[in-house]
Image (tube, rainbow, N blue to C red; front, side):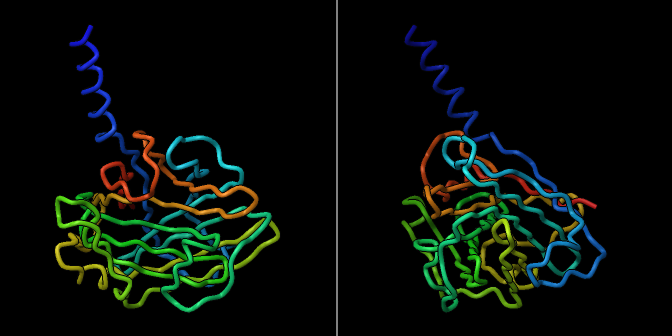
Length: 232
């Protein structure tokens, strides 16, 4: 009995570390204007988001769509929100502590080092952060809000149902991250990452495109990030 229980535990740990959904990033030839208006957005949306550490259904739906061309990564969110919390604030404010917002973490190799976190609220306030290390193995928690993605654009637009958000991230800026392995993608390239939302409405909820099978609380679980594949 003890042996079988131990083997089950090993299988459980293995399944946690190998469970990753693969989501497509569709290539586009369309000119994308970052204005928060998604009426012309053609790439399919993924979701809805779920509670990040349980997989349970969220109170309000969030959907995300990703596309790319040779220069940029584009991300669009549709967030239903009956009670938008937040306000316009200076860049790099800690809006993740106070405001309804959408987020994206990208760690191409999934090693938990030198990856990026971005967040945008319903009023187009955004931050971009470089996470150099988040574990004792590489020296402990070490992040930089001073990091800036050159050419980054983000605009949110409120709607009758909530708010929409559009983001542009130039690959040329990501390539400059030392030891980040942000090589310029091509068809078939795969990056680890996850899309998130924090909803501070009537009930505070921390949502993700892919939930964490380990049931751990907190978005920073690189070993459990999803896989995003660049496709035609």
